[in-house]
Length: 76
Image (cartoon, helix red, strand yellow):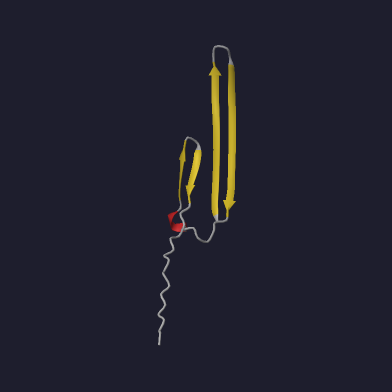
């Protein structure tokens, strides 16, 4: 399983002593998801990065070496 979790908290404070007021803004966002990975994913080589707020997850497949079946047929 691959578990992705993101949590972000922001607080903006604006204080004006001349006019005697205080303003605060709060924002909170949360994202959580669990994905079931296929059996052909190489779990040791999973990579992730964030660029401009976009999460990219790289799930490389396990490289299977295809062996060519060789048969020896005896002709008499």
